[in-house]
Image 1 (cartoon, rainbow, N blue to C red):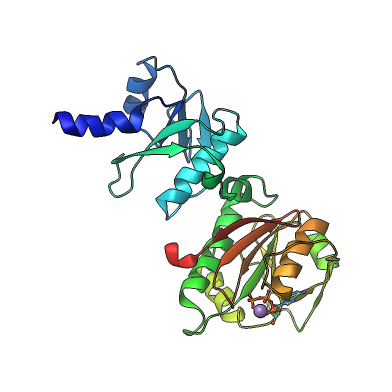
Image 2 (image 1 turned 30 degrees about the vertical axis):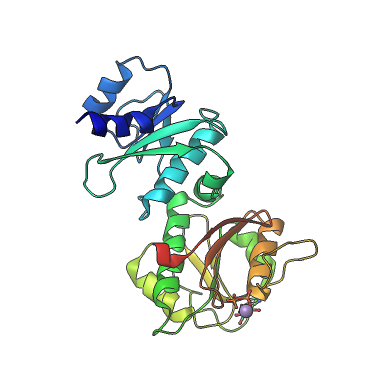
Amino acid sequence: MAVLSDLVDDIIADIQGLVMFSPTGSRYERFINADLEYPIIVVAPENNVNAATYIELPIEFDDARDQIRFGIEGAIESGIVAEGDAVVCNLSIFDDGPDSLVRVQVGESIRSGIYDLFVNSRADSSVIRDVFNVAIELGKKGQKGKPVGALFVVGDAGKVMNKSRPLSYNPFEKSHVHVGDPIVKVMLKEFSRLDGAFIVSDSGKIVSAYRYLEPGAEGVDIPKGLGARHMAGAAITRETNSTTIVLSESDGLVRAFKSGELIFEVDPEVY
Ligand SMILES: Nc1ncnc2c1ncn2[C@@H]1O[C@H](COP(=O)(O)OP(=O)(O)OP(=O)(O)O)[C@@H](O)[C@H]1O
Ligand SMILES: [Mn+2]
């Protein structure tokens, strides 16, 4: 057994923080009463253990790595951990209780922008999540098996509408549908074949499909090889307080832009 505890010792040696994902009250009590010399950071949908150091988890990420990135980026943003620190994350990957210890070296490589995407956007994080999930599903399955691209502009819809024009009639004109509604997800996938962008309000209402964005794009930088959809998706976030989530038909990746910058990129296949 000694060899096994050596393994654990290596993982927990000289750490500067313990990140507990959704611990039970008793589990949290046990650790907080152990007077550890480093902070215990709780990351959970709600702070039901009354943790002194708590980061709200807006969504259950499908990928444990995104969950860990989110927690650590939140801890960096809150000044609890810093680049160069080593932290241990305790989370559940397979069971519904914490079944894993993951040691993470806090550095550039861990930063994905996922915390910024969900927490610092103007739209509710649940709206970002719903749109993100539609883009991921579309990226995985395409539309009727064919790869599709899509451009979702989330938040600050009034200003976005003023900086764009209709390419055709707007199928969502008279409707009050929410991006989290399963039927709407099917509609969004159906309409993804169409040209233009989807415009979503801060609270998740679909304001429009078929929208042609007309932001000024001078000085906006996007990854090489990407074209007008991504340029418009980046540029509109510089002229408004929106966040865009873009699925590329050509490389299949899902990207997010804010303030004219690429802040997040993920391959739907890893989800
Ligand atoms: N300004 C814009 N506003 C809204 N939609 C746009 C805009 N420009 C392009 N699109 C949409 O993006 C689609 C793809 O255009 P393009 O191939 O140039 O973009 P891209 O960035 O290369 O995207 P992809 O990686 O999906 O190919 C267009 O058919 C159009 O529907
Ligand atoms: Mn293209």
